[in-house]
Amino acid sequence: MLIREMSRQECIDLVAENHIARLGCVRDGQPYVVPIQYAFAANRLYGFSMPGQKIDWMRATPRVCIQMDTATDRKDWRSVVIYGRYQELPDTKQWHRERMNAWSLLEQRVNWWEPGGLKPGDQAITGASPHLFFEIEIDEVTGRAATVG
Image 1: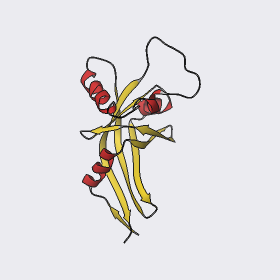
Image 2: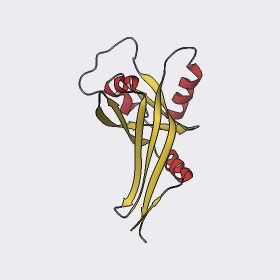
Image 3: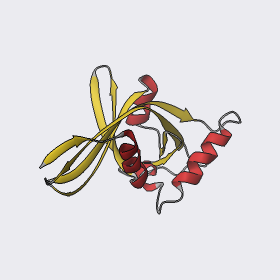
Image 4: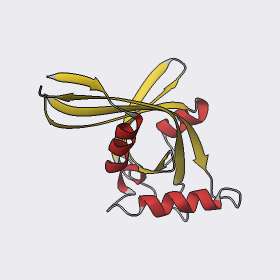
């Protein structure tokens, strides 16, 4: 098996062809990793969530890390790590365009809202949804790939 560094374009191609990743964030020195569904465009990952731990932590410390990978077997895989910054897209006039862009990109996937919109346990019925959209602006991307050699 040979392991090599992936080019930036190879990394971006992997990001673009996938839609599930692991988000790493930190607060008060404690790391937290959770799967997210995302859409990718213009050097940004777009996501959807209900308020909760990951949102609280990203609000407190906007620097985040995203990891995604693909594997056909244990000797043939690709893995990408993204370092970036969290930005919430509030439902305001100022952020309307970015929020609608996130929505339009995410809705291209079947059941795009489920991972971020469902919580464990019974949910209270409310007159308005507290859901939110966010983006992760990519600052740096790195990747490695393994192939049988």
